[in-house]
Length: 281
Ligand code: PAF
Image 1 (spheres, rainbow, N blue to C red):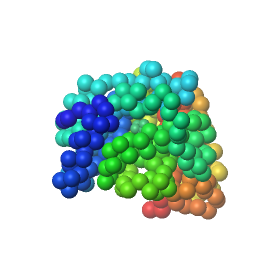
Image 2 (cartoon, helix red, strand yellow; image 1 turned 120 degrees about the vertical axis):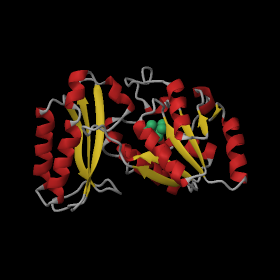
Image 3 (cartoon, rainbow, N blue to C red; image 1 turned 90 degrees about the horizontal axis):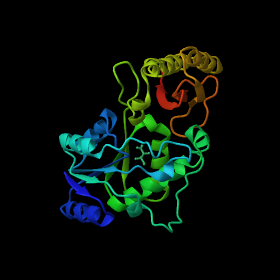
Image 4 (tube, rainbow, N blue to C red; image 1 turned 90 degrees about the vertical axis):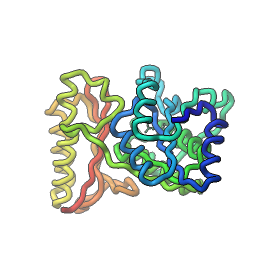
C-alpha cells in the first residue's frame, strides 16, 4: 500500500496507472474503517485494476455542535485493513492540503438536499458535495464506490457527477449489517451497552414498515405505527421517518408500493440513520 499525503503525490501515482491503461477505482472514506468500508473496497477491487482509498475527516460536513473533534481517527488500524483488502494507494491529506485558507468555492446540489438529512443537518451536503467533487477531480478515477447506508448522499453524488460532467461511474454498495441487523457505522462505537441493545430495532421496524407499504397497507398508518414502535422501543428522538421515491426522493403517496423508507433517530446523544428498500415481493 502506497501512501500519498499531497494531491501532487496522489496524481503522480494515479497518472502512471492511467497511462498504462489501468482502470482506477476510488473509495472515499473518513477512516475508522469497518466492514462496510471494506465491502466497498472489495467492490472496487472486482471492477478495477487499481484501488485508491481516501481517509479525510472533512471539517466542512460537520455542523459546529457535531463531533468533528472527537470523530474516531484510527489511521494505523485503517492502513492494516487496507493492506488486508489489497488496496493499492491511500490518499490521506491534512486539512491545509484540501482547503486553502482563502478557499471560496463550494458545491451545492439542490432538490435532493431539501429533505431528510438536508433539513436536519443544514450545510452537511454542501460539505460532502464539495469534498467529493475535489476527491474525484484530484484522482480522476473510472469508478467510485459509496455505501447505500448513506443513500441520500449517494444520490447527491450521482447528481453532481452528472451535472458537472465528471467522467466517473458512481456505484452504490449494499449496507453491511451486524448479525442483529444494525447497520455498521463508524459512530456505532459511541453506543453504550443499553443503547446498543435498542439500536437493532431501527432496522427491524423499518423492514416491517417497508413490507407493509409494499403489500399495499395504508402509507400514513404504516409510518405512524413505525414511529410509535420506535418510541416504544427506546429511541429518544426521531428526526425523520419517511417513505420516498428511490431516485427523486419525492415523498410517496398512498397507493405507492415501491420506494425507500428512510429514518434518522437518536439514542440519547447518538444519531443513527438507516434506509430500507420498499419492493413488491
Ligand atoms: O460517507 C462518508 O464517509 C463521507 O461523507 C465521504 C463520502 C467520505 C465524504 O467525506
